[in-house]
Image (cartoon, rainbow, N blue to C red; front, side):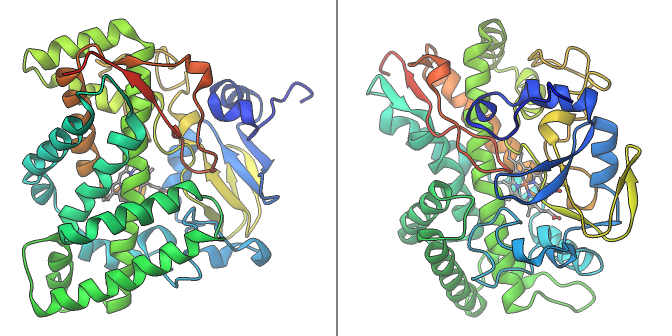
Length: 409
Ligand code: HEM
């Protein structure tokens, strides 16, 4: 194992794929020491990854981790513990998970998301208009970051006058992501207090927004408790915004770096043909997806993953970015092929925790990328790709900034 590549270093963040290819081949279930000092099994082959994601012996409840000293920040949601937001979907197992997921599914329906398309489009148009005359922009800060945060605020029913606060809180969380210290804990507490108050107000005056839908939703007479409703809104916000920023940012970068593919997509979109856009979003999720590692799982009993023995209490991290480039499952895995037909990628996970926001994420990705390509047709990277900086953080994969230039429109 002497030539085992370094993991989680600076160079690794800009391109982790060669290291993951090495692991997939030589140590497909590998006990790694994470930057925090915690040891966890990294699962890198597609078949093992898919099985592990659906394995009920792997719990999402951090109480199953045997090293309680490391209990902080494991869910990837900084400051979350201090704010007592533990009862959300990504942290619980059946039967609680089944009950909560069923309730939220009644309100967060594909139909509600599809009906939301005109609002996402006008949001994208407004954000684009704010910088399209300038000839240059940072696509992350001016477009990819505000779009999902305003979109989820609109969907939840956060009044417009409060959305600027959310933008600031989200900015704080993303800048300091990965640790529960400093401003993050404060931001989380403020979001929690705000959501609790908003839910309280909505209860008295139900509308047709998602929060009202969550309050109304019932299953065999059961409703979300106050605390569950707050945690649910919080996880929808948190799980839905950094991921979508990364879909737009990583997606745009992949297009800049693959000019023939970008040209095909641009021509299709200009001709009003959305088929390549639809398969293209799936391919961007596979090729350089927003979520590098699925969230933490813990073995509740001794088990084997890909022939490797895993002990009770061991943390398991499924490396989606590695599985989605496994040559045993995907032909030419390192090639961006927007028309790829056979593409069962794991970018949204798999099994009972499969992304509940996938329809919204796809909608935002489609609207964002097609709007950029049509309104700023000569959009291009303004720096050498080697200069781009990636955000640290274990779970997500995304750019800090994406400087672009274009003919002012
Ligand atoms: C779960 C990816 C957007 C809400 C997940 C999981 C993945 C994922 C991989 C499973 C994690 C695991 O099993 O460890 C993504 C990507 C997105 C995206 C790539 C954008 C491109 C969204 C949006 C929302 C959302 C927009 C909501 C507004 C959730 C929730 C869960 C989840 C609530 C937990 C579901 C459960 O545990 O039952 N997402 N997501 N996501 N996602 Fe997303």
